[in-house]
Image (tube, rainbow, N blue to C red):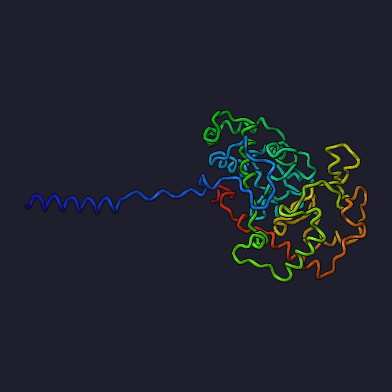
Length: 351
């Protein structure tokens, strides 16, 4: 009996010991594989880019995110994609008229917000890039932005043990090349879908969200005054237009740089108005600091009528002071706070 009691107490001690020293539960990744998918919100058009040749995976997405925020992609290791595309500003460049590059160089155009990119037919303010997979290479090879040469960038990536592993995990062929670099960044940026603003909840009848009287008046004004260019649900048709801005000292001729056609002079891509409250300053050159300034431009007489879009009245759109206030109130409902706080798109070095 004494022997049995000894064995019983020994087993009890072992159970207590093992229970107290159990391995801590594994921390759940902030990037669960089943949370990475192309989202097509209800009643939205089909996206142009579908990832059919860029299979969505956690490894490829993480690689793209790492590259997006890494200064290694610049010539002198000082500028990352995320330097000019900040999440809290809907991936625009907060409070900067134009992009800032290596060696304190200034670009000539404003860095736009990045979201819903798989619906875009082309990229850059002049529409000069016609495929999302080619877009990441433009700032990397721009001498005013990240440097201008891909070969040294690739050599730095190949020399990095971190990137050797990450490229190997993301692709069957472990060779680090331009194609894989583009695919990874495209996957990260392409999955940035913004569709959870106050406007969206109201449209979907979710969470008992209602628009205020001012916001409803603004929405009505938006439909009658603005939606011909900034059509729902993407709030742009992404067409190239001259909106009547007088040229500045740079005299950026816009789309004509790409086509060589004088009929495209001063035409720029119509931006989405989603998250517009976060992406100041505005216009292709960042000349306007506020939405009020933007509306003042459209309601005043247009001075640059060369190739002016026929949708913009030469004498300006008629809006009262109250109309402008209501319209701005509605535009603020397009802010997607869930998107700008989504940890999946945050800098991995600060999570």
